[in-house]
Image 1 (cartoon, rainbow, N blue to C red):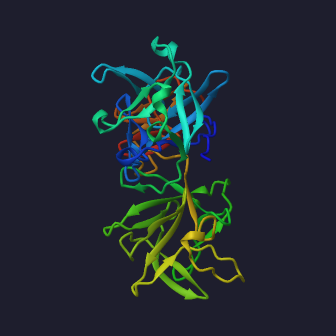
Image 2 (image 1 turned 30 degrees about the vertical axis):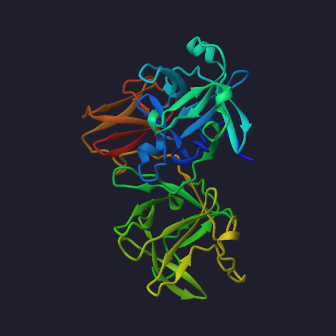
Image 3 (image 1 turned 90 degrees about the vertical axis):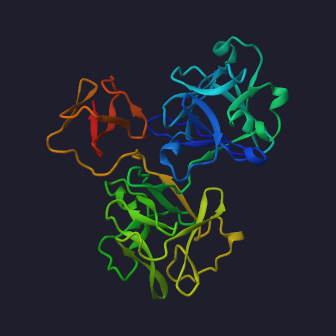
Length: 379
């Protein structure tokens, strides 16, 4: 059975794709903010800004329903009337008064507005429906009688995809082994010709950056994994000493690079092909235990399966961790001030843009000035 989304908060969000079951060219499209409207688009694993426009968290309003809040805009999923289409379409709104209910339907859920009369003055239940190419794949609304079927059935898919970073857009991720539950961790003092990473419990002592990785695309379209703390990349060259051990490199064009193979929802096998044409997979070894052969049919939750989750501080434009000496960034009386430059941007820790000169809730914010980012605490 499909999984319902977990309720979360702005301080501790869980991000989901709202994905239609669909059929043909509507299959697996996800709710994506485009301007103030919402369309169904393919998941954007190579465009972080677009990916943020496809992610939603869920808040519960007791007795009313659920609010779906977009990661990119901070706005809620709502409804508006499109004159050109002569129909109601999904949109985002700063007015957090749009609440939803969902009920099991086929392989997923039917979604309807729980307070549609207050929003638009129209009576009757309004169900979300994936429009076709003639509607530019806008998410439209229909009656319950017309909402059944694949294009009216949606799933909540947790954001666990490996996403590609660029120079201007960075997504730091935790990589966890599905069998052991431990996280890929860089070990600084390991010699280059031996294993330089281990699996460890998730760190909360200030060393989290040793467990955070970004994916960079090589010239051959394969991937390299780069550690946030050390800058080391996981090389596809290996050394053998009972097991094959990965070496590290600081050249992302070195070696053949890595590929992914989906083994289950949110779980991936990671592999490379060596100079002899042999495929080698990431595998979480257990000392004293024999290595199991890779079998995709049985790879789910095995030592060959890996999951991805985003570290909290993922915003566009992170290039260097400091601000120029002639620019002063500080917080005072619930506002953030930047002296020495008028061209700057403020984000929450979760990548949501914040207007300049806004009165802000207590918390940590990220300020980007001339391509450099710093943290600011608002008390």
